[in-house]
Length: 321
Image 1: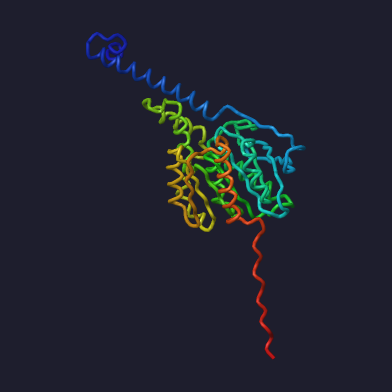
Image 2: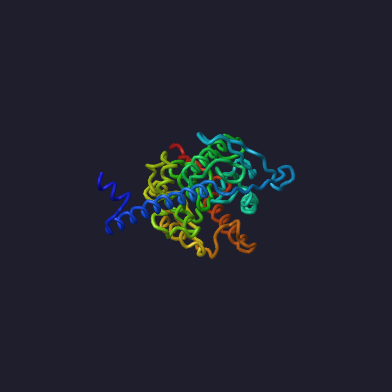
């Protein structure tokens, strides 16, 4: 009781110092927690932008495909048909982006007779909800693959995935367990969603405050408890032996370039690497976009041909006379 009374009404000089330190510490923790909570809210609920197209007049004869994502609800995507029976490439947009920003890349792939599909992740474009920076987004890609494989105008056993940052994480995570994914193009990928979380906090300028990143990571883990046992992708990459993978690093995004480089070095063959001066396809200039499209389309044409290779004809041995 005397100690409590002295803390509440300090009379000795050293108790005044201790009380001041305790008050400042409590205030710092509360303030940090409040700011971290606000940052987490802004990160998992980014400002949404949506692009609508007139499906009847848009080149490429797209149609709308709806599919259900277990636990997350219904999604709507745009399916752009290519050669009947050709593989399908799913474009997985990045954080704070949407499907409408990928129409030029989509058209370039469709021009080479691929079927192409694009949709909005949770908390982006037309899709409500909150983002998990890749955890739940992998489930959305998985559900899209399942829905597309039911169509009678695509090859149900050959898919390609392109993804940028969050979309790259989701695409890579899906490919680990789905043999139908035959080719991957991964732009600015990362190993764990908390790496993307840290990057977003650093962009606000508040990452240098004591305990800010640690507090935000704790809250993010709490929001994603169902994925608390998820291993880093780098530890699972050996399962992708035999699947062609192109890792794209952008010089102007050094943190994501570093995480992409780490994944490239950990990946089994076949693997390829491309280093480009500027990242984020949606924000590129026209010339950079054309170069990027050519690089991506060429990789898919090489690694995921539009027409499946013919099985070798059986060898007939003449009967002995």
